[in-house]
Length: 285
Image: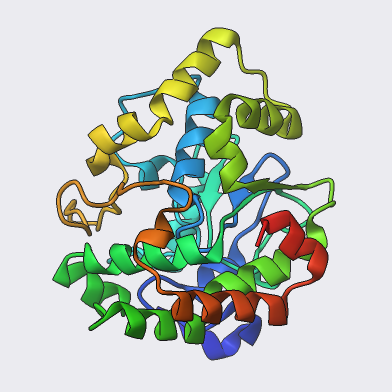
């Protein structure tokens, strides 16, 4: 990986899931669509929804990362130039996921941004299980560690603060014509309406027959039954997660089964300290 000191520091520092050179040199085009969610806020689900909408319904893809790449993720054995060359060869419209803040997202103002926001308590609990279900090899490669306790995980999650940075950075763009801000709860309640909203935003035509397939292949049951398509694949082809453990629950409100009132208060108080009241109202917290 090249020396990040020679690029703008805003692109961040390199680690197992972040190559600042990819971000600094990525050239967005107007037809690109970037999914810019915080971790565990419906990212993989939106990758699947958008890919199925673009393809008109395709259950035969090998892995979601191959058709909707993680924009800033380093690729083993490949330079950032080689990765960008592969991105250039992707079919249009290109689809990418990223966990970057607005300030760190290349192509803002050019590409279309689809952003799902989810209750921070659910994201925190979901990320705990995400770490617990990763393989040892994948944990080491990503730079993460398996938490010793759930309470310790919450403290680490709050310290890293990815959810707060993401939501805080994107909220000023919630009325931007190139940004579509969706609530995870709304998509869970009525995915068909969400698909219509996304199609209208992107200007994509989706026939009733295609929409039926998008709904089927983006359902929890279908994705759970094909978990291997969504567990992040290393270049070796090995899954980064224990078999059948990447697609877990996807429920709304399931955090209540695990989180204590004291830990919940920590998460919510941080949100009230950092986010505008209008944003909190939108989030429903």
